[in-house]
Length: 280
Image (cartoon, rainbow, N blue to C red):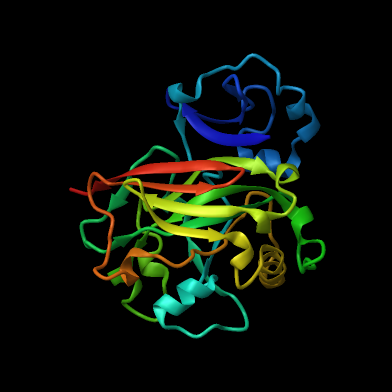
């Protein structure tokens, strides 16, 4: 199944994406957000709605970030060998983690905002892991059973601000820089995320292309590691890392600019597409 969050005529909701259109779940269930539904909702009841007449066509709503209000977004840096090599950094025995704030996220079709303060706005295509049930100190063997589903993510990075100090955060959570969508595909359709393929395109040109099996720290180990630090909650998002090919490491550098279109495609999920708009 595919779940999305959306806004229609100023009202926020969440829904089931079908071949016919969008079934509004917010008007059918007590839970009024996808995060809340993941915590307490009944997936079997949603499955029964797969053949229902849709409430909306997808093009008639604005898609929001898949989880607009997660308790936490944990991003993983330097998690593909090719990206480690291009940055000149050393591989670490444990994952490099940093936080992104929910207010920095946008949905499919919304503009990625190149901030006034920088011309070094870079793309980072990634696979997002959405947690479906609470867990602490989860074992690697059990980790995938805690996953609600997967989505596409563009961890848009303001590179000069990222390099202000040894901490990544300033360049990683500017307003309007984190694309998340278009929807979540439930984990029953993707029992093994390592078979996924990730590709990023800028104005139609392939700039990143990798298999998720090449992650340095696998998705099960990421879940186990992060859940050791603090409990993972339904709706939490782990952004699993970007492959080689980022714009900052190209010669000459390739940064996103006003009028560009960036796409992140993950096999079995779909395409996250966002235009780029310069802040004025």
